[in-house]
Image: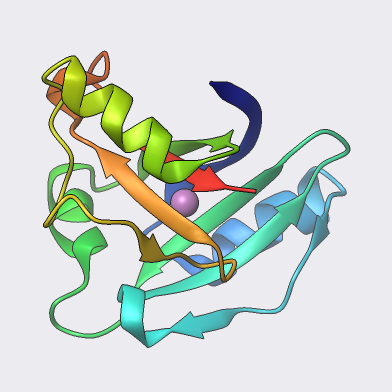
Length: 134
Ligand code: CO
């Protein structure tokens, strides 16, 4: 059911500094910042050969990243994303194993224009897990 690692998302308290770290210090290819108001984040993508990193910075008062940064003031890994071929099948499989899904348990269109769903960290080894249909 599970395919490739799609991305690792890192919440950061200072997006410009985080971008500089990857671009200037580590020499990575980075995107321009992108506001995603429907997700409450501004993102910068770091392109790696085999996957990407998403630097997440809060956008708006109701940003899901805000609380995370209050607890993790230096930033930290917010979630990781694995690809699935069929998100409805992945959701059924999770439900069949009593694995909790975030929100209303229905897939939403994610940051890359594809359906995504989040698995509760308490049911996923302590780390928020995203499935993205590819
Ligand atoms: Co993600």
